[in-house]
Length: 179
Image (cartoon, rainbow, N blue to C red; front, side, top):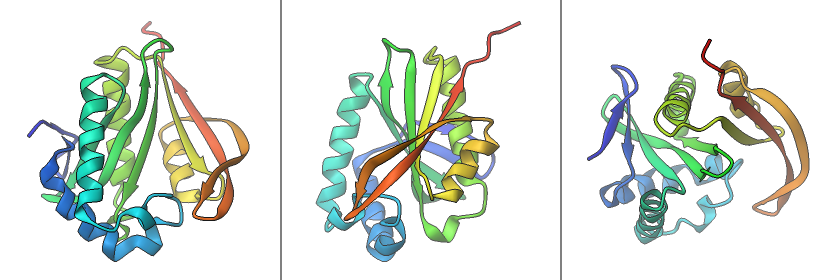
């Protein structure tokens, strides 16, 4: 398993088929919670849903178009953090994430996203990171702000979130030139 250590409590592991069962367990228990800000949980009705997701994610990774990692906190798979898209031509990536409700408030997302930003700017030689968060998803927006990201704007009617049309707050972070 390919992993990157974030700190003594948290590591990121490139997504793999063996994670499908745990993803299904989390989403089965927390569908209502996760569906507040994610469109896909109501569609995740079997372990096979996650196996298909893993296959597509690994194909995108092999083609350099994305990278999905499981967040492993104190040995337990607790969610995902990813480069949803990597655009090498624009030297930019969009980051997304979700976390089990019972692991909220421990700084897991902030630490995981910080590590992905480091990978983007150092290993991938990208110049910009972007995160799109639901306008009213204040916890997600606070992650962006803690990481020093700039609110670049609000895009109206950006997503149909399980029958609810929501706006997105778009945050950006540019690589700082080395002085």
